[in-house]
Length: 134
Image (cartoon, rainbow, N blue to C red; front, side, top):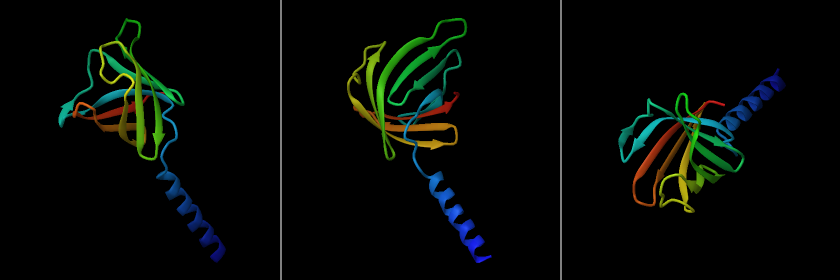
C-alpha cells in the first residue's frame, strides 16, 4: 500500500511539473482575438481575420477576408527562450521600423491561447491574445 501511495505521489508531482513547462515551439495556426495597446483595449477586427502560421522557427501573418485571397502582411523568425519569445520581422507589406529588429515578448500559453506582451522599441506597450485554430 505504501508503494502505491508513493507511486501516485510521484505521478502527481510529474504531472504538476509538466503542466508548468514552456512550449519549445509555437507551431500551428493562431488567430488574433484582441488585446491591449498602450493600456487601451484593442478588439479583434470584425470585417476580417488576422492569422499567424508558425513553423518550428518562422511565422507568416495573413489577413483573411471572406471571398478574398489571403493577404500576407508580415513574415519573420522567432525563438522561444524560457518565458521570452524573440520575434524578428523579415518582411512587412507596410513600411515598418521593426524590420530586422528582434522584439522581446513575454509569452504565456493558457490552454489554446497565446498571450504576447512587449514594450516595443518606440516605447509603446502591446499585449496580444491569439487563439490556436490549427
